Amino acid sequence: MTSDILIVGAGLSGAVIGRQLAELGHKITLMEQRDHVAGNCHCARDPETGVMVHVYGPHIFHTDDAEVWDYVNHYAKFQPFNHRVKTTSGDQVYSLPVNLHTINQFFGTAHSPQEAVEFLAKQADTSLGDPQNFEQQALRMIGPQLYEAFFKGYTQKQWGVDPTHLPAAILRRLPVRFTYDDSYFSHAFQGMPEQGYTHLVTRILDHPNITVHLNTPFTRAQAVGFDHVFYSGPLDGWFEYDIGRLGYRTLDFERFTHQGDYQGCAVMNYADEHVPWTRITEHKHFAPWESHAGSVLYREVSRPCGPQDPPFYPIRLTEEQALLHQYAARAQAEQGVTFVGRLGTYRYLDMDVTIREALDTARHFAALTAKGQAMQAFMVSVL
Image (tube, rainbow, N blue to C red; front, side, top):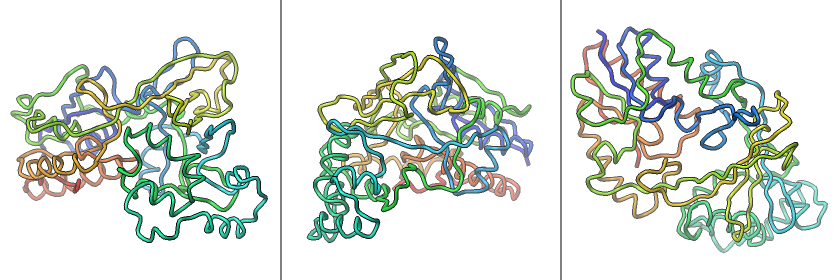
């Protein structure tokens, strides 16, 4: 049995679900409020320099999921890309994540891996047996000096709150390496689509059963007449924000150009709190297989997200949790709609996880419709 399906949002979630179901014969109508597909991983050639720009900030594909890696490589050629991040703290440049070189450079030592383990253990605040917030977790892991130099100021700028108000889990995801490995990610598969993410998503959406409508803001009234809706817009937006808005951080991008190589790397973080931007991204370094005389860069400044701003990072602090519970309960009770993706589930998702969940969601829908059953409204727990 085939269905007439509406998908809201042409990012990775909507594109993958749409393609999977279109191949099964379902008719897909996709509505996107922006003038392009690919959501926040949209890429475009800079007309001045010719550099491929990640318009909403850099996206690096990394995963241990072999099926997801095969999926994206089916639609686009991926070039190897090993992401490395530098950070400026004080008057020095260091490698992130914190690794053996970072430790030795910062403390002026020449520790072996085991000596660095023992040295950092002495720096750590072992009285914090069960860290309850970001700052306590940092002090427990790496001690006050590395925390002050690399994490405190950056975190305050990124999230707009004191690190004591952030959950400890944020820092637990960041490794400390006792080797000289300065790769930012450690996943088995890492790369960058040679022609950008917009090309990738355009290829995914290229199917006769998919009709894409750009510049088309969604309203609930537009869902009438469809057998099912996959909604990747803001969770609270589905309910027209009637009990309040969930909190996000957004980014402002200050573009500038340079002849030659400005900073020698794709991403330079700025850890000091007095520097207003969190990082500078130099986009030609995201495509090292290309050659450009000019360079285009962006300073990124994080701030609270307003109603007209693109939402980037769900805050998920105490105030948001209570509101999220209410919206999630209402979403569970909805009929004929599945909430998907970063905005639809109010979670920060890497691209590979987004694709994995989209594949699983499409397969679940297909299995249910084959049995003549209805899809449950909410596939992923957001709480």
